[in-house]
Image 1 (cartoon, one colour):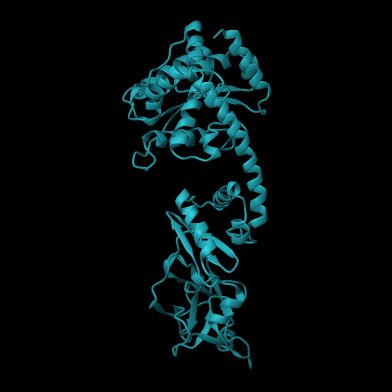
Image 2 (cartoon, one colour):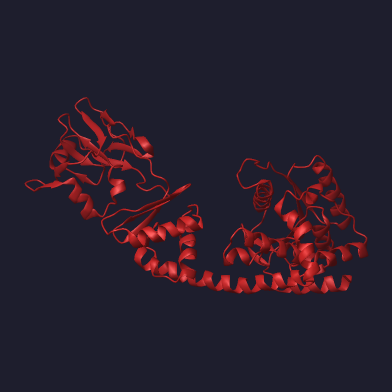
Length: 445
């Protein structure tokens, strides 16, 4: 590639870039060496504050030497360099390549200034490989649209100005200007899926279809447009079907969404409340159970780290629940009482909200619901079944056994968490100028 064409390409890309300094993700390999060299030759890039970031994964014995090479190159180009070392978790379950990428991205994001732009050297061949990998893994429109030219990246942006440029073109540029670069031996390991595609599959496709890379990239652009439209529509749809509690959805309205929106809305909802997403089978099972389960049933779909439960006209997304032991019961003198199963702390407080000094005359017991409990919530009022109070308050059934109840020595119900106080419990607490306080999160977020 003629250096003038590379210059023109980057000048045009810079003109449409959001304001902010630029940091090149610099591995020392061919692609990032070309990008760093070309940007270093542009006054417009330097004026924004150009620097480089090198991440040492420690996966190769010579990785420290690569850092030294990068320092030398950046010194020659008069570009500041930040070198970072990371420990890649080899047993993450994502595979070594994906784990290294996650560690690298996390390290880069940790050093970014607000609105700083990270320039990655991904090119057209990388894009074609990514599309094929996503296709083979059964990805939807968002995955098949592969890498965006510009997207949010931590507090900054990820920028890929070379997505329309081939690897052959970058090599031509490097040879023309006399660049040296680092060759990572792991790039030749065809056990790694991406390398297998690069070295064995794509060469065969190109031999039969010479424009394979351009065609795949063009398809990715079309899918990107569709994915952006779906993203926009799913954002609007989520606003329509989400309950007042952000962790709930109106499930009938969700089921009525078009197939193209139902899955994206579900995933957008779960991401927003920081819960892991299900696989396609689990989504299908959720749809089936919600559509077929009788109204009085309480379907629950689980996957690692999350579960979705239905109650009335809502579904609730939550982390897997911990339930206290059915027979758990302790004596309580009013001191702060840590509850089992991560259910918070029960306290007796004074009118200022401060912990009450325990008194010998205080003799309560704390346990959890066992069924059949009742209490009188007002003087001269009716005795009410606790079950009915729960239903009237709309408390989901799975939470009812996680609410502590306070009883006296004869097991008479005095309080249900800090939700209801019986007439007898109110009289007892008033004698000590005390109030019941339960610090908790009924549904962990």
